[in-house]
Image (cartoon, rainbow, N blue to C red; front, side):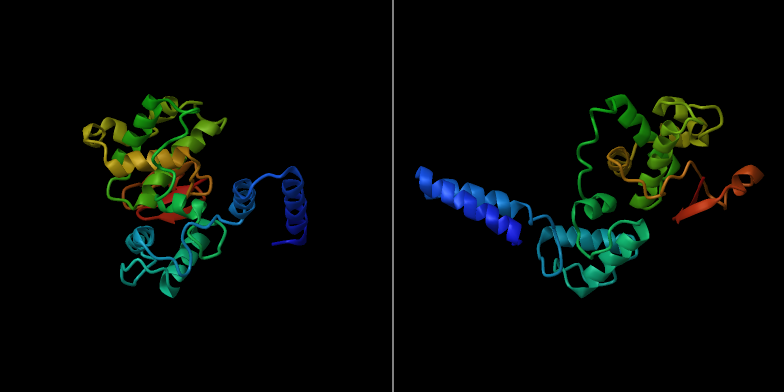
Length: 233
């Protein structure tokens, strides 16, 4: 605890003693100060089901090669560190709130409902499911992020539906994939993208080089490669 915090605590203790407030109230004050330092959800030495989920996700993304044993050891920490470095977020080896969000393990159950309607969430999920079927979870979120990046860009329509249905923007709108059931992972990916996760780093376009021959698209500057897709500006 820093000198400043200790000084504040001393003052509070004095106030409590002078006013005759009981020990129960002191416990509340002590908890308030402790909460400031308690942030990490899983870190080196942690154990349990959350650690297993982290290991499983990291293994599916190719970062973790160890056993799914629920023990946050050196291999798990190194995998988290590599994942953080690749995503461009704080590299500390700790699976905190932001890292869990990027892994698709935290914050995805509730989208930013103050900004998006249910219809918009469902439409984004539908695009992700049709465009990124078979891609990793990160790759699915990335497709959703591109749609949202276009909405935010003055060069594109200013709504999700406007971007999705813009003439020639997404070929999936015209093929059978558009009518396939929306994958559960795509629904979570849409929510994570809406909550602020952008694995692409601001991309406005993406393409699969094995399926695209468009010279203009192939000339775009690639800023990220995730799975089969190249994400561009």
